[in-house]
Structure formats: C-alpha cells, structure tokens
Amino acid sequence: MHDEHDSVRDRRALLKNGLVLAGAFALPGAVSATPRLTPLLKASDLRPMTQPPLPSVPAAPVTSSRVVRPELLRQALAALSRHGNRVDRHDRIAIADFAAPSSQPRFHFIDLASGRSTSLLVSHGSGSDPDHSGFLRRFSNDFGSNASSQGAFVTDDYYVGKHGRSQRLIGLDPTNDNALGRAIVVHSAWYANKDMIASHGMLGRSQGCFAVGERDLDQVFARLGPGRMIFAAKV
Image: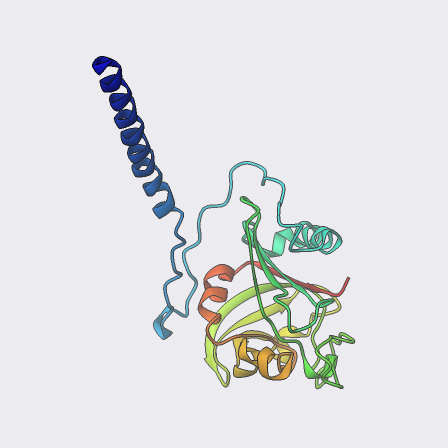
C-alpha cells in the first residue's frame, strides 16, 4: 500500500514537472512573436533606403483579400504587371481604396511575398469631396483641381517641403500623369491624424496628396521606399 502511494505521488510530480517544462518551452515562441517597432526616421534619412532582395521565386498568392477587396487587388496587380518596366521594386505595393470613407484605414501596404498587409488612414483631395462628406466623389488629373487622381503611381525621392518630409510620386497612367507637375506627394498632416475621426467622424482633406497621420509617416516611408507602386482607385 505504501509503494502504491509513493507511485501515485511520483506520477503527480512528473506531471507537474512536465507542465512546467512545457511552459518554459512555450515562452521563447511568445517572445519571438512580439512585433518589432519600425525605427524612427531622421531628416538625414531622407534618401533612398536599402530594400530587402526581391524574391527569386514567383510570389506566393496574396492572402490579404479579406482586407483589400478582390477586384481592387486584381486591378492593382494588373497595373503592376502593365507598368513593371517603370516600377523597380515588385516586392511590396500600396493600394488606396477610395471606395471606403476616410474614417476607415484604407491605405493598404501589401508584402507580395508573404501576403501580409498593414492598413492605415489616408486623406483624399478636397476637390474630390467638395461637400466634405468623408467620401471621395470624383477623381481629376487637372491642375488646380485639388482632387485625388486614380491609377498607378511610382514612388520617387524624398525631400523636405512646405508639408515637411515628403515623397514625390510619378503618375504612370493618363488619369494621373500630371501628378509630378501638380506636386501630388506623400506627406503627413494633422488633419489625417486618428483623433480627427473621434472629433469629426472623418479626416480632413488634402489638395490631392496622399496625406497620412503624423505618427504614421515613418512607417509609410519605411514600407514604401523609392521605386514601388501605389495604386489608387474606387472600385
């Protein structure tokens, strides 16, 4: 009887130790899953950034269709294929879904190799939404329209201008080929900050630029870099 009691006690001890070891092995995985923060950029960093090497095999199917609507994603990938000789980097793209209101994260950054995506807020132009409804009503490529343009853009160099740190864009389609001359760029603005939604229910409007939140600009610059495509549409 005494031996049986000792055996039961030993089995309980082994079970307890096994659970402790299992927990110990689980901890490193949990720690490694903690996302790393994107380092802040400085003014001296406004230059072409080093990019990861392009995939040497065909990109895996994009798995972010739950975020980017399938038809919009299909059009963006078709644009990347069509303008491939003018877009140096094919590893990541950005898609501005202007069918969504400005209160929703509609600026989608997609890693085409992994399928992972990140979505941020972005403003549209005042000429595209004259009633300030929060919805883009129309596109324009005209000078002085203050409207957003649709189509594919390729990111160019960084500079410091009237909106602070900014990135030039080159329009690749007849619907946005005035982008460089119109100074349609990526920049940050107070009216694109998240707290605008709490106070006004929508973001403010740009003059046609892709204006993002002040705290998001470093992440946007790090994800875009020069030579990548932004696709803007309302599908």
